[in-house]
Structures are given as structure tokens and as C-alpha cells.
Image 1 (tube, one colour):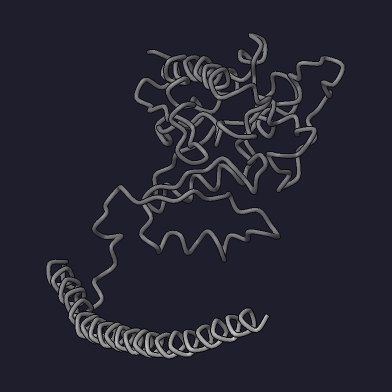
Image 2 (cartoon, rainbow, N blue to C red):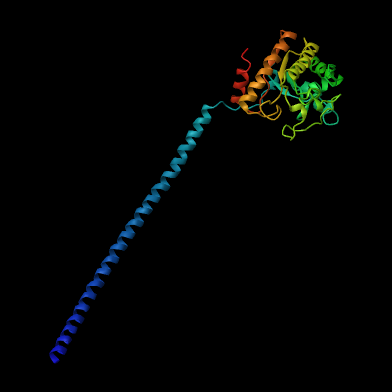
Length: 305
């Protein structure tokens, strides 16, 4: 029993001694480990500081390089004139024009919106549309009862004043006319003129935006075209079919491909009517609402001539 105890005691003493030695070694190793970690951390810190310093030194140089590049670009560009150049309208000759509504009181009195145009140097004016609605030279204004054509006196005066002041005129011929509505039961005896700003996206659409489609409708529209071209022959020789026909001003919307072809078919007959009435006149493709190659290609394919 004692031996056991003694043995246990010796074992315990040996364990204790062994433990004390191991703990001392462990502490030494931990200290050494900490020292290495600290050294590594310090080295990493020094490296980061050096890298940051190097980046800081490079950044001003990079900015300087960019500035130098911009200065070179500016130097290569055309120099800004030191004086304001003279008005350019005297240099553009017959190339500068605007789209303009015909004056209509009370919104557009002549004296505030029309007369100053003559002093601006503008050479061309396009007429034919008034605030997202029809204009005084549009089909529904000119033919208010079937087969009877008349241009309002104000429209004639507008054309006269433009021409007398050296301004050339391009006229849009548009829109539809409720006298020739597809549904015969909805055809009025006399046209009721639409108000300004009716909007191409109204639902249901105003009848003037339902483009001519049947042979009867197209023939009636061409009657109005021939009347207008003949009336202003020798004074107006630029005629445009519709405005922004690729959007809601030409209804119904049946897809760009078919709608473009439909416009093209009407454009062909429109061009024939214009040239038959005035061989010297020019036909203009209706101005599109933004670039629309798909519509234009299909329209021109539908009017190959």
C-alpha cells in the first residue's frame, strides 16, 4: 500500500515536476511567438505605410497627367473667340427654319409671336399644326362641308406676310376629316373643329387622327391636297404629308411595319397628286417623332417611286 502510495507520490511528484518544466517551456514559446507576431505586425505596418506613401506620391502625378492631357485636348480644340460673332442668320442663307403655329388669338397674337419672326433672320417656316390639333390649312378646316373648299382669311394673310418678308413656306397637309369617317353613321353634315391640345394619346382618339385608309377616304384627302397645291402654286412649293405619323397622330396603331407601309401607300398617291398639280413642287416625308428607322424603311418600301 505504501508502495502504491509512494509510487503514486513519486508519480505525482514527477507529474508536478514535469508540469512545471512544460509550463516554463510553454511560456517561453508564447513569448517568442508574441515577439514574432509583433515583429511581423510591425513589418506589415511599415510595408503598408510605405505603400501608402508611394500611392500618395503617385496620386498627384496621376492627376497632373490627366490635367496635362485635358490641357492638350483644349489646346487642340478650336479657340474660343474673344468677341461674340455676328448673328449667324446672315451666314446661313436659306438653311435656317422653324416650325410655327399660325397666330390665333388670344393665345398667339400677331404682334408678339409673328412679327418678331421677320427680324430674326429665319428663312424657312413650316406651317400646318396648332398645339396638337389641326391648323387653319388642315383638311378639316378647309373642307367643312363635302366637296366645298375654302382657306380661312387669316391663313392666306399669314402666307402673304411670310412671303412678303422674304420667308419661304413649307406646308404640312393633314389630318383626317370626320366628313369621311369610316363609320358612315358618324359622319356629320358639317365639321365641328377640334379644340387646341386634344392630344395624340386621347382614348378614343379624335377623328382627325384616324388616317385615311379606304379608297374613298384617300381620294377625298387627295381632293383637298390638289386644292391646296393649286391655290398656292408659285408661292408654296414644299408640301409635307402629316406630322409625326409614327406615333399617335396616325391612328390606329397597327405596328410599325404595317403602319409604315400604310403611310407609304398614301405618300405615293400624295406625291402623285402634288406633282400633277405643280410639277415644280417638292414632296416632304412627314417629320417623325424621333429617329425611327423601322417605320421609315417600311414607308419608303411601300412607296418605291
